[in-house]
Length: 118
Image (tube, rainbow, N blue to C red):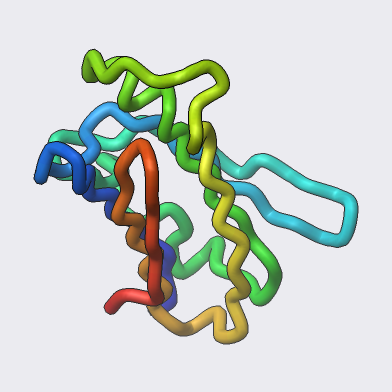
């Protein structure tokens, strides 16, 4: 039962990044296809469950784009123009369509990190 999920934590404020916009894309060379765009819930996750469920998981290259600057501006943080971090694109591969891929993001206006979660 493979699936893809994400979770975003706002490390500046010590809370989930509720309201952050995220776009999931499939990348095939120069061809980029948007699969879905979503807004994270109160827990910094997708309200609709997995971003890709077992029926839509496929081996390939993907990108999650996190709209970081818009999120922090929406929280009242004054950012320079242009912001140090605007959108964060994370490119990753799914090698096993039966696997669980969790892509968390820890983020502030000045830094971010990610890892393959569980």
